[in-house]
Image 1 (cartoon, one colour):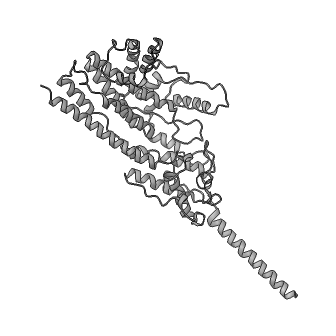
Image 2 (image 1 turned 180 degrees about the horizontal axis):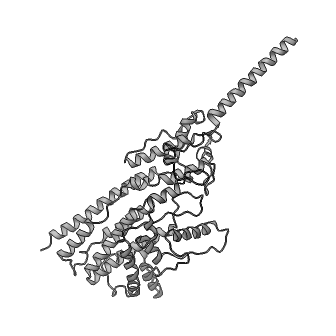
Image 3 (image 1 turned 180 degrees about the vertical axis):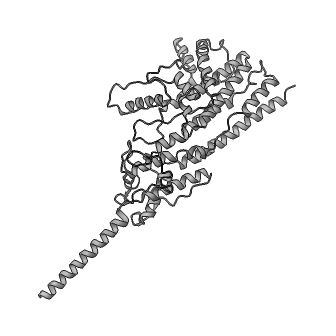
Length: 447
């Protein structure tokens, strides 16, 4: 090979290297590189307040909007209930028990947000009527049927039927009186808490809290039928109305889980029929009083209003992902949603976080406008996903979070919640109207 040919070959090789390097740089710039999040109304939705390191402080923004100063005063009915019936903080025996540690931290923060002492002790012990009856039967050598006992307590009954519930009736009087007072307070605000400053918005205090409120609803249901059994219609009406109010104030919290608990509890009230005991029929005045109370219950919120309140929480979580943070058991968004769950596609590709945020806001805008969200597509069914443009890939990533998430990131998916919550609210509204129509029908049949 001549010297001329050698130089020519080197030039071609150099040209190829330069071209490949240039293509590599271009591929990195347009495909692999992440476009960092820019704070603006179009992306982060709000531009203030900020954290010390410059992030949007969604937590404080949520508190400013949904948790007024009255949250920590006697004007807040939930605060009264916490002071009365919430379980005390149980210090974990083992610091390695992460769940117990976080639960203890959440309760401490809840008490602080309500301006209550962290060593709070409940004033009343919560007892379950059905369990008391079943335990009494077992003490007599009789194996009870839980469902049968519950069914009997949802029909008019007296202490002749269940003498073992005498103490339960007496013990429940002060507790349910507090509930009746709490739901009639000017405010009923359940503050959101988190177990650390990096935790996203929306962590419940404790799943057991939902069950405690359902149990309160059942207590009103059982005592209502006791009052019917002894012919005290006025006090039965009091319990029916209080149970309805308890359901309504829970439905007005900005959280789908609390809304569903509220629907369940008001559903108990809708099962209550003051004419269920023919031996003690209600008077026209009692019917009129009940109908007036039901017609003046707080307005039912819309399902989309409840879901739209979650915008701050989801943007807060996306912001943590955008900064590469690991949030609890949820690792970085790209690896979790578009890497591990869609083969090797997308794992090492870049995303435009501004597009992700804009698409998330488009989702919540449709909720506020009570419209159906139309996703761009499903990345798990999209061929040649890795060859999509970064913008299209980012749109698909956002839609994956809200519409097609794998099970592990259901925390972000509200499309299914939207449909089920809308259906639940619609059915509940229909049942509420049927309840009032039934009372009107009963009144029309009076002599």
